[in-house]
Length: 516
Image 1 (tube, rainbow, N blue to C red):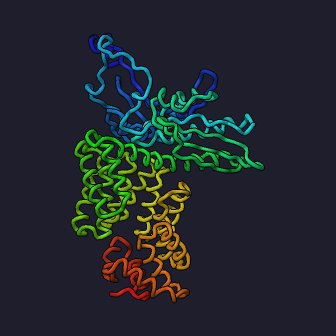
Image 2 (image 1 turned 30 degrees about the vertical axis):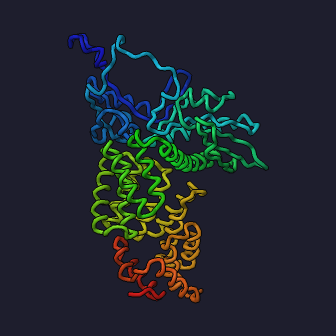
Image 3 (image 1 turned 90 degrees about the vertical axis):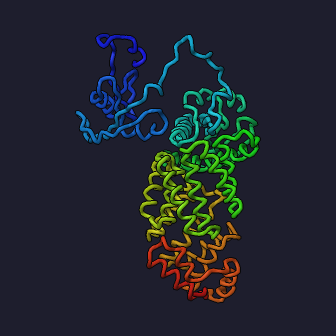
């Protein structure tokens, strides 16, 4: 309307108010109604002439995704709306929303691979097929697809094709590579719902590379049809939590296959993540170089700042850099991550944990991680890092709940080590020494070269009383892996933990035979 009114005098300009809310509506033939419709109507009435007001739900959905500023107006008491509604005023710069005259408009492109945003992973979720033989299960199959689309679309840094486009292939047999070309996506998610033996439902899901047709990942889930809605939520959460890491691994391989002379910020970022996963001193150094190259291209690359913080706390923890130096650099990276990534779960999680660990401020750090979980409740790493932050706070029961949630979301994850180790540590602080030993042994099997589970196991066995004959050999293993380890260094490295927990751990290691 600003464009339409541009050349008209004030007396004939047409000015609208707009109110936007995100919620559920009741559909009655051509009519829509319900509380959420009423909220939008009332927001419209509160908007200034030519202005737009949006609700908090809209703000959370679009913040950081549109060229506009959303200014908080506080909670408004709206007519016939029971609860106050938190509203935001939308403002934008005219130069960010220029329209193109018809004569200047480029020809419309034919849909294809170039339609996707090439710098970000793009996905299409097809309608899951109902193979149960029961037409009544159709809505359940559609519901799972819908939920996956909705959940993925809320996560930054990915492109998810809208339901209307991806569901257009429903009931048709089309090659997945053709779907990829027509929708302009790199990945296609397909699946089915089938009645298994007895009353059980079997839900199958597969992630496919749309360029090659290669299956990247596939999984089956089982559940009772008596709990359809609970089953739908559980399956959706598990699929989304697994899909994203699988896509990330494939994107890393794609970036590494590109010629080094034409790398974007995201390609550099993906290559750096591959180096972080190597988990060595030299790979961390290479990762830092790549992350800073990405940030030089895009200084507001919040996820990259978060990973820089993660590298510095890793260097500090492993003794690969002077602690004070790594602490200062990690704190600065964490600050940048959170400042630039208020709606980026990766930046908030890694920046938040850096604050918890490097600044010994677990309460402040966990607040940022909880914000990440609001934005993406299926972000497995956020559940794990929150678990460690709650352990630092001394809330060990809650920490175990968070680690268990991470395992529920991704039961077949390759990096389950962190959850196993986290539970073993929390069990130790709770005095559940036998359980601490079991989880420490499980963590050790997952990642044999990491010494941390051995340390927890030694502490737990010292307090447990049973299996004391294992302690001398266990302590020798710990000291051969970490020759400089003493009670003093343990206390220093656990400075972010509660004083009572720190002394509890030190006493146990002293009993086990670790030198002062």
